[in-house]
Image (cartoon, rainbow, N blue to C red; front, side):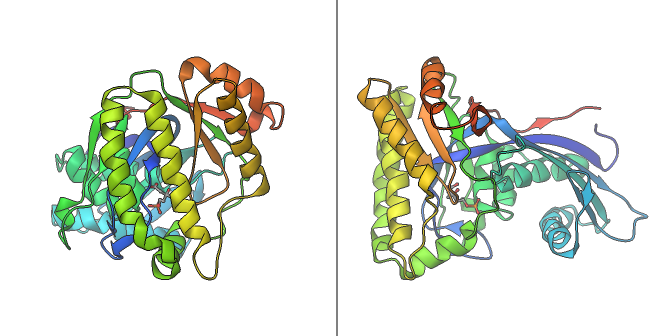
Amino acid sequence: MNSLFKSSYRAFTNIALIKYWGKRHEDLFLPLTSSLSLTLDAFYTDTTVEFKPNAKADVFILDGVQQGVELTQKVSQFVDLFRETAGMNMPVTVTSINHVPTAAGLASSASAFAALASACNGALGLGLDNRALSIYARQGSGSATRSLFGGFVVWHKGEGEDSQSSYAEAIDDAEWDIGMLVVIINQQQKKISSRVGMAHTRDTSPFYAMWPSEVEKDLAAIIPAIEAHDFETVGEIAEHNAMKMHASILASNPSFTYFEPDSLVAMAIVKELREQGIACYVTMDAGPNVKVIGRLSEMDQIIARFKHDFKADQLIVAKPGSAPIELKA
Ligand code: PMV
């Protein structure tokens, strides 16, 4: 759907296997460490951007509802990055639909800003590549940096205050036997946003001092394991990395946690499955939902066990997803 000043894109979310947790520069969204993720096909955002020379103000419509000042301002500030690049100041109308299964309540900022960056680029005819767009997406939400690519993606932390050096890169198309089961524990908005949670952990957790070097080690080990399609090593490193992040969060002062009782139930099921010889691993982000990294060929067995403790609509299988795709009319 690309006419003059109008473009539509679909971008997929991603889940980090090696987490981003802490910034070194708040305004530029520069991270303290690099991170690595898997893009997922099951959760995505469709966004249409249209620049309107005769409109009076920016408009943001999300899931059919026109948004208020706060969210519209966030979108406007992000679109400003593109307006500055293009050297124009036309008002924009942004229309987004989040395709996250209704019960999911998963954060959608990664797919949202990746879709918005792609559609701004299309609407303004800037011709930026996905690496350049990942630098823009980063300034909407850190994890969005990685949604400009499909499969396994590294987000390089970059150097000093050099925004251009902190971008994402695809390292493997993930077209092998790997996927995720997302276990929906709670669909409420997260109580402590990732922005607040990561700053609090960085500033008050004595364990955080260890986090950057642990991430370096985990990245150095997981990249060759991904390249070798070594599922078990990938899963073990990812699970350990997530637990180190959540341990560091627990050790912050005052302490907090994203775990809920059912998160622990899901984690226990994963351990039990492993003891029965089905390799699967846990990762969790800034919320109670549990993501189980599993072989796609064993997902039916994994789901069958989860169904003893969770309802079918709490269980969503995701396969590796692609880079953003242009939506034609
Ligand atoms: O950029 P944000 O605000 O979506 O933060 C992402 C934080 C984690 O999801 C916990 C980790 C990550 O790397 O995605």
